Amino acid sequence: MPQPNSSQKSRELRHLLLEALVVVVAGLLLALGANAVSSRGIKITRDYFSALNPPPAPPPSTNKATENPQVLPPTTNVTVETPLPPALAQAAARLQQRGLQMATLQQALQLYRDARRLSGLVVFVDARNDRSYQEGHIPGAWQLDPYRHENYMAAVQPVCQQAEVVVVYCTGGDCEDSEMAAVMLAEAGIPKNRILVFAGGFDEWSANKLPVEKGARMPPQQSQSK
Amino acid sequence: MNNPPNKPSTSQFAAWMAVARWIVAALFIWMGINKAIEPVDFLKLLRQYDLAHTPWMLNLVAATLPWFEIFCGVLLGLGIAVRGVALVVVAMLGPLTWLVLQRALALQAASGSPFCSIRFDCGCGAGEVWICAKLLENLLLIAVCAILVMVREGRFCLRFNLFN
Image 1: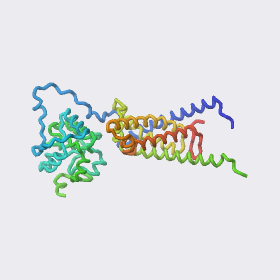
Image 2: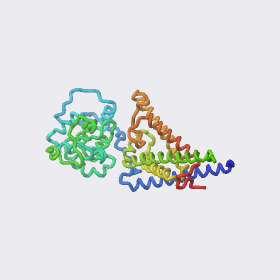
Image 3: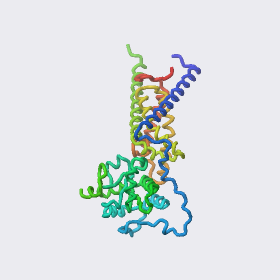
Image 4: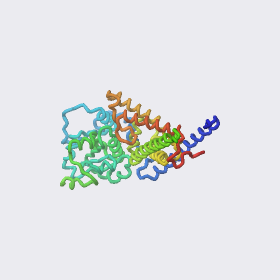
């Protein structure tokens, strides 16, 4: 069998590279088109993580105590200080920087059992995506997926505006979605001192075999009677 | 009387190459679909690599890579532009594998665990994976695709070359 000469080889190489280039260009065009028509597609120009950017430095103030009064519910009484896992400690520091507070499981549970929840003065907000929310959420929790906040904010914002305490959670662990949702709520006009981020999230909640509601949200009165 | 010695082994080789190509194609389609179903989850995983410093660049990768993988998988499965696709896959998988390795090394340094006990979601489309298994899988994929680039075996293909 005759061996290909060098000009044949270089032509083959050119064809191979051209073929790869055609694949890349066609693939990218098709991928952009598919993303554009997909209902779950990414919006290229949007900054999905803007809520996690470091907040601007606060103006100097002489009285920091009155600047951001911490209004954890009066029923909350956490006296034992246990060291937080590194991820939670980092989250707590970030939240503090933003003037937000972190809630522990005990605090979240106390608020869940608080009678004010039935009248909408204590509101839980789930910052996970549709699939996770449908699979199970804290009973009565409203959904606010921060990556698709435009779909939820109109319903959630008025509810949170009327509430005395808003507890936001996501999966827990390294999840930052509850922080993002909390920042978005604050930007939408909910006073920061009313917002708590339950950092343990749904994983910690369900691991402690606490009540879980599946499917669509039911008003707290209904979920309570179940 | 006897068959030429190269005939059976050549057709056997063609069959093996086709099977290998279909396995790579199936993997790419499966992993691409897993990412394309919830691209925001993929975006969050990509962000961990701290690759892009502008949001649109990160978004662009998260928006296109899943569909691009599906596209490559379909072409490989059908046997269209096989060598070109395989070359693109090698060029794509090499740097991605390097990034996964770097991330795993960072996680190992942070946790102090043995390297092969590191398990995390690398954003590859298969959820949480053991790092050593993932690296081995990627190296195998790279090796198979490198063979596909080098070998001109066009049987079981719709259009092996785009340009002749």
